[in-house]
Length: 110
Image 1 (spheres, helix red, strand yellow):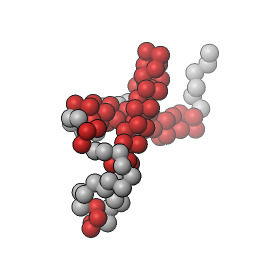
Image 2 (cartoon, rainbow, N blue to C red):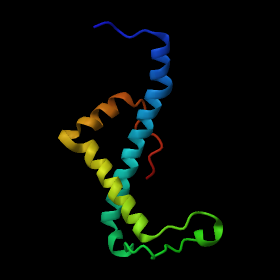
Image 3 (cartoon, rainbow, N blue to C red):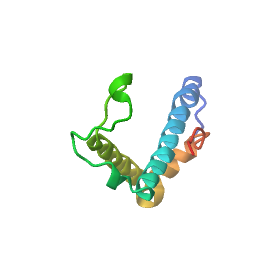
């Protein structure tokens, strides 16, 4: 196979694809951390899934959108779906992602 040397293709790979892979990999690590903390800290018992159960975090007065326990639970369900997709088939999709991302662990919160 011939190497891809087209200037436009190389620029697209460097300016669009690699940063996208980086962001996606970072999302994977943040999502994994959130799932692990959710389980370890027993958040499922503390954040109920009721549609009317608002989380009183100051958003009611500071302009941020109000969130409910149901929203948080739905987000965690989506996070689990993302992680499952990337980790299926012995991490096949995750491995491709990490091969492209130049700094996949950057900006990962502790």
